[in-house]
Length: 227
Image (cartoon, rainbow, N blue to C red; front, side, top):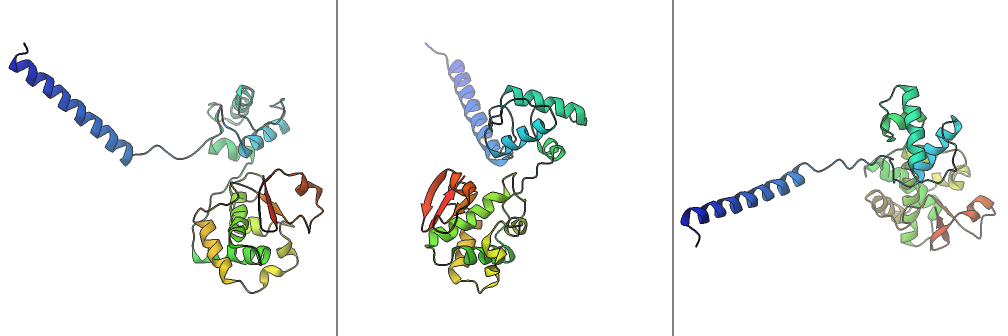
């Protein structure tokens, strides 16, 4: 039979365990891990491809550019970091990316000025498209900001030389449709009907072989959206 003392001890230990669990749960909510994502072993994507390309240009990476951050990429990053006096972690953090000349922006806030600028290009590029297609055009522009192959600001992406027909031919200066304002707000607030695409084109209006070669993710209205 258990003594009263042992029962009290067991109950105290159980109560302590419950309190510790609650404290850990509260701590994880109050102090979440950083959401910053760094390119390291196991990473995939455009940023990794950019890292590999820059390292290859410097004669430090001799493999194919795959977009997968494997051991060979890590070894090349370490060599580069040692050359530049950066702590050789093998992870391509902000300091290493900057030293490589890789600039990646972040989605701007939905301020009135950003809504206005994004609405201008949406209206010019997607006038007459279904509403989802208008949001999708805005999403492509925002996705480019976060992609290492494009400028890292909203205005930089929109006014990149030759990037958008509507800028080249002046349609961007025409009156903005009401739906384009709404589409700009939705895109800036996170709606991406393209699932991360960085290109789009109208197959009836383009003969650009590069665009036709891109993998199509989704078709909305007259536009094909591609990676």
